Image 1 (cartoon, rainbow, N blue to C red):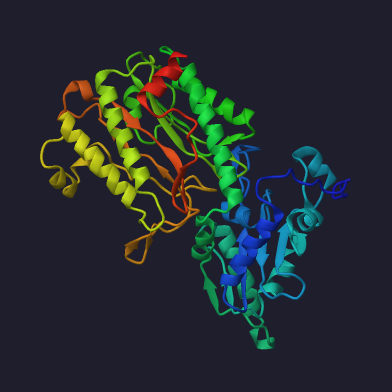
Image 2: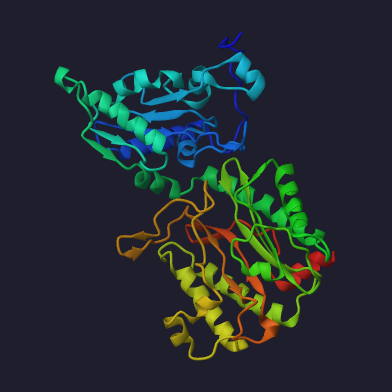
Length: 451
């Protein structure tokens, strides 16, 4: 009958991050919180795709980072110093009928047994229980502005306490944004996280190799996308980390092209920007290669400039250097290359000063990578670029894009879009490329496609 308890909650499959590590993350965050405070972190919600079907559920990254709990309709509450346990989780109760239709639930029992919650309650009881946890706390840590509905719910709990001030209730005095502290923790990856990101990089590298070997003139962009997604799924990465970009010819000059519907033509390049998500962690890789298996003279010339820029960026990644140094290196190398090939004219230093390269290279050289493909963490601290530290993971993705309508260059260059992107971890003495498994040089790419 509805509401009846199912069998004992199933233990989740062993993942790359241990229950002990999730507990350490929560402890580290609580140690950063002010005394007499409480943190409230809601899960993601299920989103309607059409009528009565939902998009595949993807957990909120902050919530997942602290709990590993993969269900919607949940709220994590951290209460440092609470006598009966500091980690409280509200989640859906067990229900045999709903589990028959929609899959297993952990319920409060599973939240404690498998996810390390000290206390767990049905989500339907949150309005009765959470105000009591908030009362008497001086500060509430919560990320306001992500969900208008949950923002109102938090304020309703606080106002419920305020309404009882005359009878001795003590409401919190401050509401403080949680993001900065939590995202500082997420920025530095643990050994377990780096292992997962290496695996994600290996899976993504195999997928790009598969697409190169499959590619031939007359196919459609979406067919290469299908090869990529197949390789992801066969390795257990059932979702891409972001919509895959497969841009043939001039479509490669559109930075976030996801239509993926055009026919691939001999003589064109195809740019693929695709990465898997494995146990919550993203890979983000781009390769550009010739549809017919051989680069022509102009394609090869521009490709070699982009590759040299990426190599220069790698060499600028080490502890003590700042975040923007790899980008500065790509700007220098790309500007020098464009002048050498005649696409820009003038002094390299003056062209860089007036950002003339931005007609061809309009984005930055990379971003943080982790649970989110554009991961959290400040790029500047105060007025200065952030200094790189071991455990940070970033992308390195220089590019050159000669728009098909750029009449300031000769027609032979127009419509060529090239980007080369890899995932790089900062180590104690330099860097580690996590996506080495996919060819990068012209010779390597042509040899793989010929094979």
